[in-house]
Image 1 (cartoon, rainbow, N blue to C red):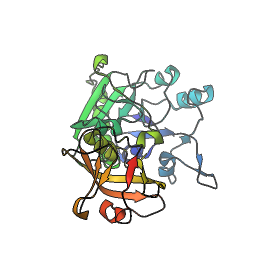
Image 2 (tube, rainbow, N blue to C red; image 1 turned 90 degrees about the horizontal axis):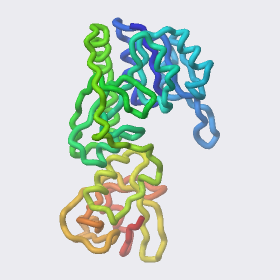
Image 3 (cartoon, rainbow, N blue to C red; image 1 turned 45 degrees about the vertical axis):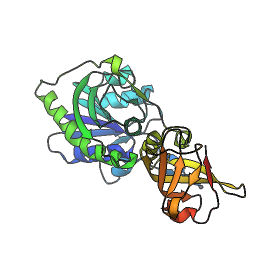
Image 4 (cartoon, rainbow, N blue to C red; image 1 turned 30 degrees about the horizontal axis):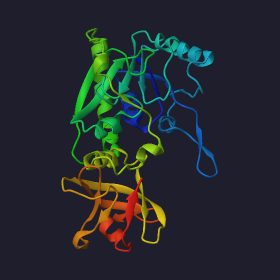
Length: 312
């Protein structure tokens, strides 16, 4: 099959590499987002998908808006059999969806209809889901609302972070896609409508999502710490006895069932643990980082503080 790949984020890189290497299909074009200014000097940086093609002859298109007439005309001129989309960042209009001869497929990193939207990986961890996976769906103009072709499940480990789950799903995606393409080639690919009554939504994350609310239960805070690692990170403020406040990132913590005091209050029993009271239960801090300092164990960090308090 002749395939056009549309994507931006690095989660799609393993799938792009697989499409470049496979003898069964021909990658005839790639669409990604425009280069963006980054850093203090605002130098332009290519998205991961474009960077991966630096030594390839596959044409790369970077329209500001994929629904623009020129972008649609470029895609139509490629005459693909299948369009494959993964983590692109724009909703495709009907004018693009109708271009491929066979299908326009999206690889979504959740078991749809659960966790539609921009942050399904983090949402699955925060929700305490036992599993997630890759869904291959036929695209429509809605937000992850298309009919299902294929799903592959992946267990979520107890210590899973947003970063580790991202990487595992990225490695799973190529095999799932090739299985779906094989079914399309054999004309036996299923098409199952989603059960909209079971749908949940995972909105795009902002830095505000990473702020720890100590009034929440310890188990919920612990899941958010893992889900938001590495981005946006789990952040709180530490106020010392002198009243000075500084930002503190929490990288690892453990929820406990013991009773605590006022949410955000800190105890250090026997100088061997750092315990923070929450809305329900107590959270033991394991690894933290004060702004401008290195990461370290919570016990090592708080040795220099007298009667610290954490707050939202």
